[in-house]
Image (tube, rainbow, N blue to C red):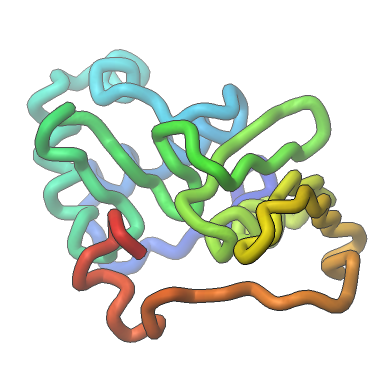
Length: 159
């Protein structure tokens, strides 16, 4: 299934959690920010509590993570619900990734060109990454992952 350029699979979710998932992504792509639970509820004619319950189920995939302190989404992968050091611009809309991998994933998920103002991990010098026609420019560079991918979800906030 494809909506606004994003590709989705049903992944075995029940009907309502999948509606919450799709609505969350539609709103994020359109506005540049991950919506609040009440906003998703209003769009679907559901209560915030029903949406919260759907996110509990969706968290099993690690794509959706609720911040227990804020009791709102922290992540709707590859999008971050909070500003980060990994901004992404797709056309006129700005987004945030939780890490460089997610930032690059925004362009990939949307099948759109993007600009990622980044910085060097060792010297903090600005580097602008561009995704054009599905290719990353500049072609040379190093992306550093402090944690091996198989351990990312042990402490996703640190990763």
